[in-house]
Length: 386
Image (cartoon, rainbow, N blue to C red; front, side, top):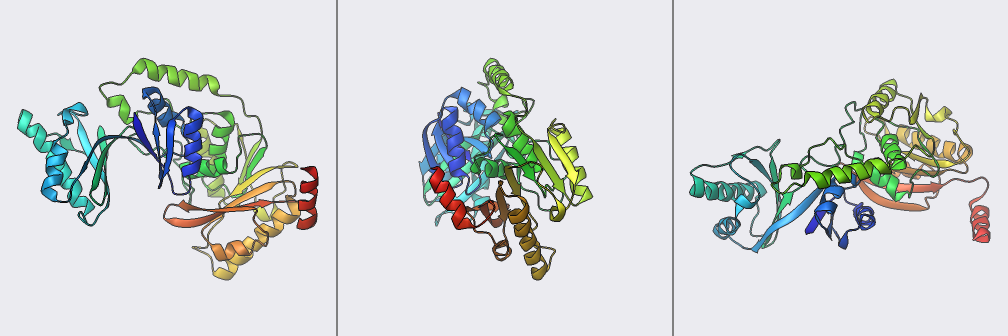
């Protein structure tokens, strides 16, 4: 099968590696997506085990058209009884970039009519639309005159893991958090610290990655569970294989925040994920936080400044830089922020940097290598070791 995994902008390469490691073939990077080939087993595993995917889609019908009438007829050229029946409800998510079709809602309405009319002509009845919780979710992609209809195998977005019930301000999305950890190349070989843990998404995703726990619950009902060709025996085998892969936590994971609500939210969410015993949680301001061990990975999503004056947020980021430099030598630090001006006040030169999106916010994700002494001496010592 030809399949497409959707993801966040900036995480395409991370997702491609996940798929390659899973055995996918013909892996190709797209914009906010990765195209690949695989069988039914890979489709099931991708939904259960990919940490950075949002949806796994299967293209089912492609055609070219430039007019509404041609579009309607082309949609009806597909036999919709192959993927749904009158007892199903369906929804259509359009993505349209075309000079011929300029209103995505209108073209999705035409597609809905074409599908419903086909059933009415054959049976005298029309299936119902359910935009919130359909049994069949379709995606319509139109680029100029190229139209592709895709069947969604996931259902609810895969970034919704089900554990995050308590939320504080500006949380990192679960899929984004996992992607950040993957970019850092961390799999549990060193200690992990999030000193501004908010809702706990980063340490919870870190614990899942370190213990090799699938991001999705095996009890989750995916869209493919409703398909006529769903193979329960195969699914049970995949779930059991994933369970056997889980291991005890090989490192220490620490989370802290100066906000009592954030600490409480992190505890509740970690408990929902069954990971409350894997995360050492504390209430402490980063200004006074001491490193819990000699070395490890520190990752943080600090406030961007929505509620702070510019001079305050700049001073806050300067404090972060001072603490990192003087207290966390031997650690690696990764920081995500949409405030490019405040990031400059950290006062440390990033060794890596890239652009990621936290929701609609364009953010810089930067790595800082922390060491004692001068940078030139540190680089010279590394070259000597190499």
